[in-house]
Image (cartoon, rainbow, N blue to C red; front, side, top):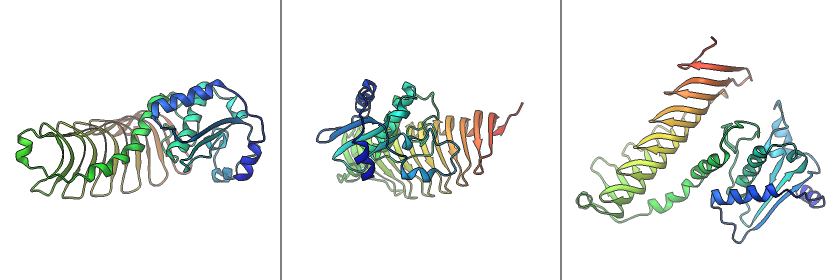
Length: 312
């Protein structure tokens, strides 16, 4: 890495006003505070291919991998933002791909985010996937998930005990209430109801941490199930609704859209054995256009109905 930085800083730095435009959009959407940090984004010619290209042996196409076109040197170093983009690759990209590449590297650098399996996520390793996605919306959703953990410590340190009588009287504020069945809520109340940020722990071992409205999980939240499953994402009236990521205890993982507790809309389901389905879902089943790729690389691309391939 030091050798690379020495050589790259001896090469010409190219100017493209789009770099600063995308960077400013990133700061605006993410709310990232750059105070006290040195900020460097350079468009240069990479002097050689990185050593980690060997990690991608077996990939059918190396040309669209983000990490071969950009480098986030400031990742895990909170004193600086330092990103390099390979000029030769940059000139071949359209404006949307340029935005996606720079968002990807800035998320590495500013928020220390790693790659994810969902091909429709900005943090997916390959640049040319899900090219029709709304990138600004995708960025906002990623950051909601990534920053959600920051609220947990503050919520769980609330010690003021609340009684059911106080709730009946319309208590508003912060506190903790313990129920006879072993359930426990710690968080914010409004007019006697769970409202704001809070944690509910069930006697079974399940736990929800996140946003509440009118005694129901509404907004962003994390539900950890007693059997080992975990969901991080959006909720409506205590049902998974919107965008979220569900990790199963057996190793399966789904990232995508939900509607009233059902997998419904566009999403990516990766099985523990390496198989993946990317496409449309309806009522928890593959339904609509989708691509199923097994661990060996065999692929079916086309229409699905009620969970089955529809070849007609």
